[in-house]
Image 1 (cartoon, rainbow, N blue to C red):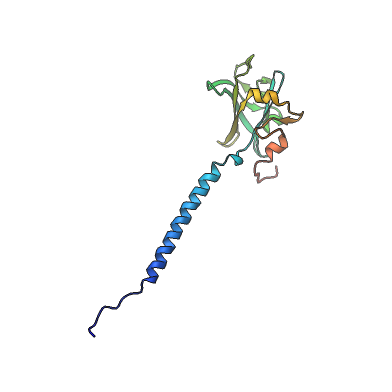
Image 2: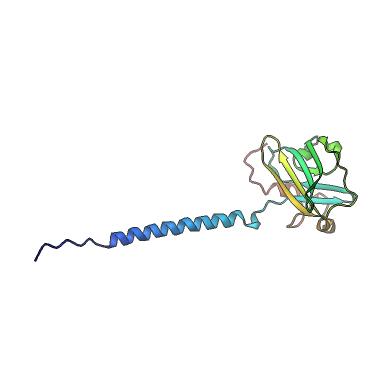
Length: 176
């Protein structure tokens, strides 16, 4: 026989191609899972609100080491700023339990008075001292008023909760 080139086995190339295909599929699957889990509404952190007559209170979730720096209240439909306050004086306010439009609870407030009729949706935003992070939520005023939550609790999209239950949603890594 004449010297013919020796044929290389094909199976190493098939295995390498399969491994690369599986790696690409795993990367795509991981990306899809990550995108889905980050946008999963079940992982939304809930804030709470209660309306007692003309008194409007909110509870924003925070860790023991977080202190509220500023709260802003907007008419969610028009995006008009209704009230701003900074540097809460009370321990409750520093921990995210805030009575809106109560100037006595803050070192500095805007001159905005509470509207006689609240807008349909209130957008509440809170920032924390020493960090650029904050939290917020939009509340449907009609739903909050209709909820009749028990004393010491706040309305949330998932039912009434106490301040401790609202804070417990966070994974706090400190013991302050």
